[in-house]
Length: 346
Image 1: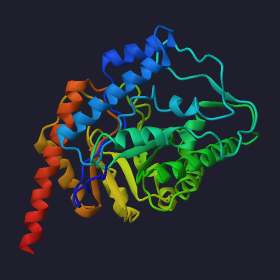
Image 2 (image 1 turned 60 degrees about the horizontal axis):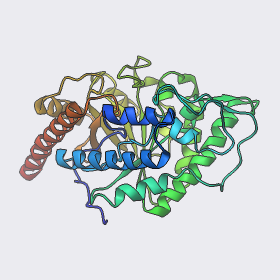
Image 3 (image 1 turned 180 degrees about the vertical axis):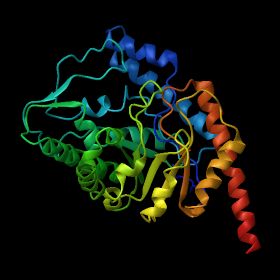
Image 4 (image 1 turned 120 degrees about the vertical axis):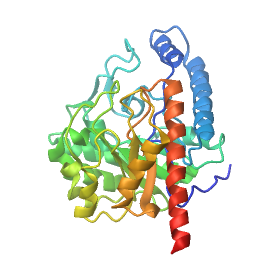
């Protein structure tokens, strides 16, 4: 399908993951316990992704994702497909658990079989006229989920993973993907490695020529709980060197203290503004969403704002996720109308 263009002002999107209904989680567990086949699980995933697209479209989201519903968590979908990684116990007790992955020899350099994300993209692109965003867990965060027994310097594993992700990004671009995102949640817990992460991110993003790149950094979102606390000052000034078009950060849960960093360090690219708290089941009102957008407009012009939840919606119950997205869209529409009216007066 030919995607519709997102609104020029205050487009809405999701970070990546979407609500995992209880039945889908049970089906994933059934697969790991050998009660259903891979083919059957694939069919279930496709049905769940179709439902997630419908939910996003009905809510009025402008840029959609597949909800990452094929993925058990933020790492294993990629880790299980990277050649050269050993997974001691591929059968999980619970689908959301992490594989015990280890690298004992240097990873083979691309080209290789690839990670298959282009097939996932094509499947979603055929379901909707809306622009589709594809997320990749960043090389630094992937490294944090792999036991390193191959490289004397951990940074070399990060760089090896970056080469593999760069090849995948290039394949995604060839498949027609134009919006890609790198997720680096572990940066909040290992702030001393931001420069290394940025170096690896730049290797990945430099592999494409016609892609809009987003870097998403949060404080963790496992079981709707943050893994770390603090402020985004650890990102600056190193993130200014990141070859990305947009930063996607959480501001609903943490408030607006960090907005000043964008002004302090003259961030002049787009900002993915988190306005929905994914760590509570309380549904924000459209007025609250609008207020959160207006406070950001004091620092970031409307043409550089993209409206999103703080993080993925994986742990939010389906009905609550639908309601949160609907009020997010409504709040963004309120402010979009205000900005349009103000521009007509000037």
